[in-house]
Figure (cartoon, rainbow over the protein chains, first blue to last red):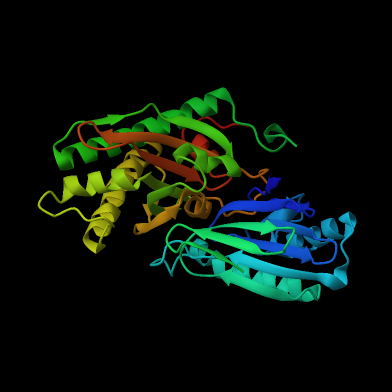
Length: 158
Length: 207
C-alpha cells in the first residue's frame, strides 16, 4: 500500500508499504529508514524553524519535524543506531528571484533539515536537493530506495 | 482539529472578499480584453479556506504541470498573486500577444517574457482597482515565472508559520479569451491574518 504524506505531514510505514509525497518545491522531503526492521518514515517539511510558542503542527518545521519523525519510527520498533536518512527537495522554484525572501526558503530548509539530522546523529546517505524544479518522492520500505520524479528531468532513484 | 478552532470566516466577510475578487479580476479581465481587442470571460470569484494539500487541486492536482506567473505583494496588505494556467493555455495566450511569431514546442525566452508581462498587467490592474476601493497601498514585485508541478509552485504562497491549522484563504477566479484560450486562474492569497486588514479597510471588522 502506498501512503500519502501531505504537506506539513509525517508518516511511518513497514515492509511492503511505500510512502509518497507529491510536488515538493521549496519544501524538503526527509525520509528515515531502518534496514533490518524495514521500517520507513517520511516528513514533508515546509519551513526551517518554528518561531512561535503557540501550538503548531510539528511536522511543518525542520527543527520539530525531524525529531517527531524519529520518535514515530522508534515507536514502531525501529532502532536509532540503524536509522539512515535521505532527503530531497529544497528547490528555488523561481530561478530569477534571488532577492525575494520567500524564494530563499528552499536552501534554508535544506540546511535546517541537515542540522536537525546532525543533532540526532542520523547519517544522511543520499540527497537530491536544490535546483529550480519540483519533485515527487516515494520511499519503498522493502528496499529503502527513494524514487524521485520530476517534470523536466525524468525519474531517478537514490 | 478543525478549521473553526483556528479561524473563522463569517458570511459577511466572505461576501466582501468575494467582491474584492470580483472588482480585482474584473479590472484584470478588462485590461486583457483592451490589450488584445478580444472578448474576455470571467468567472464569479470564489473565496475559500483551503487546506494546503488541496490547493493544487483547483488547478488540476499537485503534479499537474502549469505555467505560473507569481508576484509577491507588499505594502499595507501583504500577500501573493498567481496567474496560473495550463501550458497549452499559456501558449495560446502568448500566441495572441505575439501573433507573428512561429509557435514552438517549449515556451522560449520571448514567450516567457510575454507571459510574465501579462501577469504583470493583470496583477497591476487587479491591485490598482483594490487600492481605489480600499485605500490600501499594495505593491507587486516583478513577475517571477515557473513552469512545473502545481503544488511545488503554489507552496511559495503558503510559507508562514502562523498557526492557522495549515489552511490558506484563497480568493480565486478564472478568466479566458473566449475565442482562443483555456481558463487561466487568478489567485490572491493574502498572507495569514492579512485578510483582516482588508476587512477592516472595507468596514467589515470581524471578531
